[in-house]
Length: 182
Image 1 (cartoon, rainbow, N blue to C red):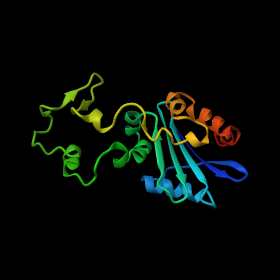
Image 2 (cartoon, one colour):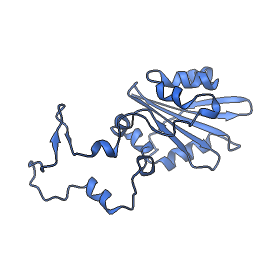
Image 3 (spheres, rainbow, N blue to C red):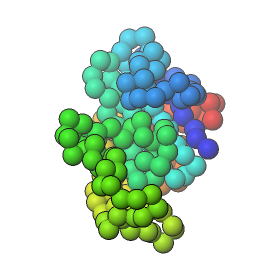
Image 4 (cartoon, rainbow, N blue to C red):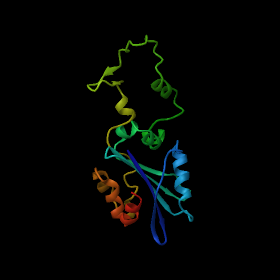
């Protein structure tokens, strides 16, 4: 189960709204949604959380590029909403790199049902290829200083685990408005 909310900073304080992400397919869509939540190009923070498995923050300040933080990239990669946040840039991949396509598509010519020599079966029955962990690392990824100027240091953000969004909202002074949309 997911929870997603927008927090828009205004001159009167934070305004919160829950949001549906059904029509959001890309980071650009999410950024546009955030920009629509404010009138004066104020700061907007998008919170996305999946049942204590991971959370993500996207900060949009006017027309600047969004700043992204994901608490557990490997967990987020298994989620359709997490995949929106895990851009090639955030993962350090070059989308123009021809080797990226070979990583995504099995072109080695092995027969159906016959694993290639580089594929291993994990304890949970899932197949993995050496180097998968390099593609999407376990643990935090992105701009850990995304909220530093708002009172939440990198160290404190990276230490958050369960109920992270409530703790973040508390530090921002937006706990009451976030609670109204939860």
